[in-house]
Length: 190
Ligand code: SIN
Image (cartoon, rainbow, N blue to C red; front, top):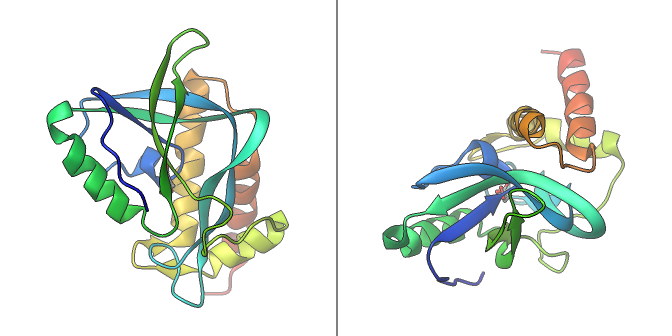
């Protein structure tokens, strides 16, 4: 985990739970996208959506030239930068590091900001798997932050909303996992 204070104003880009659970202080939020990354359920979570030895799956960014990944950008009050980053460093400690990158609001409006990125060398990284196996692992996982399925369904619904106003996302990975998760939940024996 690295920590950095950048010049003001700081923009933070969320592409996973930071879209639908922004539990930090911000002065503005705007739908945005980043280039050359795809969002994938390839990161293991033993601290939020799973347990040690039985990790759930959460999203990270995978380098993917020409891809566009939509999310939410948050502008942070310069006076609160260190407090907000300390909170996020703690929340994202399960394999994520800060990454500085261009955040696009439109093809011509771009700022430099930060995102939390779990690179494939971190010890919790799980990597690629078939949609059905990922969905099964998610339905079977729960952790201190709640059921892993909640993470998927909240993210899917938040992304649909963002994509309605900013049609930039280039893939349907989250929607495919969410569909498979819904299917498994609907056929689960109580
Ligand atoms: C993010 O939301 O931007 C990072 C990954 C996560 O916390 O789900």
